[in-house]
Image (cartoon, rainbow, N blue to C red; front, side, top):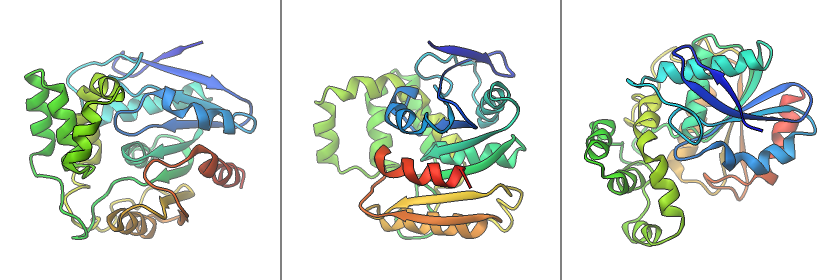
Length: 264
């Protein structure tokens, strides 16, 4: 059964709850809805109370304009209250960056697991365009969801043009287009984190919760560099690389690692 909680601005956030044990909130990345976490929920529910939710503007959650990353931090805070006032969190991609923002803002997330937040911290890949989020907004304002999705895939994910052309013809394209209006939200959550610059001194100094920062062994160099830099910048973090994994980490691979980390 779908549950809903009201965020601070009144937006209804849809979530599912399953399992028993300490509360663990799952935070998805760009284009994902809570349904994408089904495999992970099944694997982790025997040990934790899993809360998987639709980030605002996606799935069954509402949306209230104007958007700001702070509203998504408030959404997480509302879910933490549902969980009893404190919770663990596992974030993937831009969802990992959102977890960081929430922890830095004082949301009661007591242990954090982060998988491949897409920070570009050096010249190992080209940075996102300076007007990346503004360009997405412009395309979406014209009703060009498919073009916005293609722009995201090309500029943020670096999917080759020939692969994007194949994706446009695939059944999954329509589902991704449906969530495309939230792509600027992910860009805003990332802030200046895709500009190809190192973290600012002390940027994450107040994120003191024990943190596991993970990357996939088969992911590109720039992801490894960003994960390594984040693990070094956080006061209480360690890094783990998952052999054979890419940005689309397999639930059966990451679940045992999460069970161990959140049980420490």
